[in-house]
Structures are given as structure tokens and as C-alpha cells.
Length: 54
Image 1: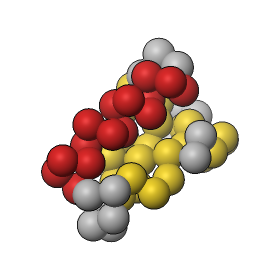
Image 2: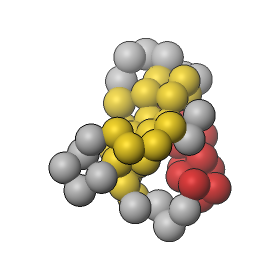
Image 3: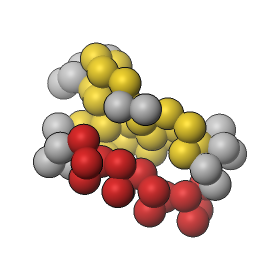
């Protein structure tokens, strides 16, 4: 599944994860580079947001 994380520095990271729990863990890893993660979305194959994880 593909996810999009939005961060404090207004950057966005798009990445793959097996489930929501692993996506949250992956998003937190990007905080070292971008600051606090504010939003995490599940994306469809066209990169449209289909579910908000947080």
C-alpha cells in the first residue's frame, strides 16, 4: 500500500508499507529529516488520498 506523510517543514514523503501500523513507524523515521509528522494518508494507485491514518 502507498502512503503520503506531511511534515512540519511542509515537505511530503510518499512511501510503501504493508499496513497502517508499519506506515506510522515509517513516517516517524522521516521526522529526523523533516520535523514532526502532521498527516498520514493512504493513497490509491492514482495517488489520491483515500483514507486518513492520522
